[in-house]
Length: 231
Image 1 (cartoon, helix red, strand yellow):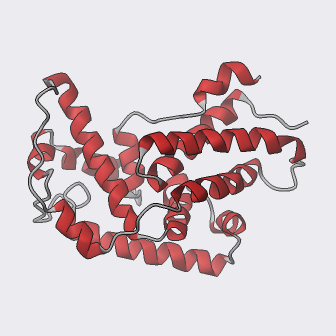
Image 2 (image 1 turned 60 degrees about the vertical axis):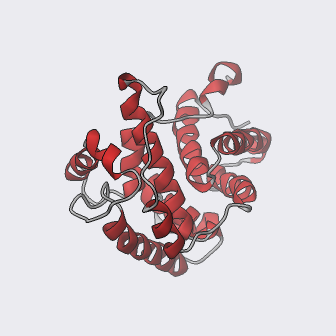
């Protein structure tokens, strides 16, 4: 019988949590989706016969479950997103102290990034996440998404171009030199968040902004709660 090691739970739990959080705006629903992926993986493990990679097996289940939860997510036009992020300046909540300020600002900008990636269709967003955040090769993504490799390459390329053009003009953490004046610009300048992202880019070449974002905030793993109970 196949089983998951503690290392598998840590590794794939983190990746599934990233997928859920980026595909689903509501964090409670994202957690629920990630935990349902766990349940479905455990139920299906007895049928896993190593005919494919364990990662492919897990991500196929994740695609099915998370896509179902994300089906009601709204796709935004770039015009709507531009108008939204350049709205009235956000203010720091009164109850937030100096110690919590940095985390609150980073989390708000992170939510904004998740929203911005909703300019892509659900399928294109998931394909992009598999490639540029999870780091799967095109062949494995093609198997998971049930598409040919050329289609997957074109989908990722189109998503990269669409996102880069928008972020280059409208996001200072993506392009510190932009003239962007989003609703968070004053607060993110207070903690010099653009510089933090720039430093990550300099350390790691060709890294996507969502992957950078995962390095700025403490990572989430909705599967860790099962570590002590599983093995």
